[in-house]
Image: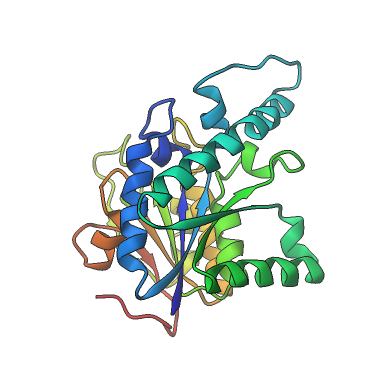
Length: 259
């Protein structure tokens, strides 16, 4: 079995609104069900803050602490939605909350890897998110792109799919520049790094810059990475069948063949 990590950000899960979309999570569940014969799937999911903000607002003098508190409130709601929706498709889920420190210490890396692998061996789909109660980096910047890349590297995954609200990497921001050119495949990250910019989505905190940081981590760990537009239904399946545009960050020697 090949390992596939799928990262979905807040903008994808909310479909650009201020509420978590059950329909988008159903779309993800259908795809994982279709992929199960070939892939062990891990989901890295943002959306805890959005899950809380759809029903309440918090006040406080420290905006980062407010977001951490919202994440603490919203994370149980987010995982409940995953459990309810995925169970309708016969899929079992498990929650895994991580921080960057878990990837820096060898004993933590080993324990995390062992736990995730046992879940996969027993046909549970890990739903990974940052533990925002004790960590703030993804709240401020990244929307779990880097966390997804570190998870993919730790598990020696074959492929990381970063689900975005854009088709992939462009030479310029296509929302601002109609003459922006789409980049289908990247073999040398240094040649495209300056295309990253710092543009962020409306709901998420990530942008193309954080995705290039993730690509760097993936390529260092021999993991292929794709950027795929999550606005399209069945985005992973369509990308694998080359039915939609996406950007592929190619390894020198690919462990995996697609289409």
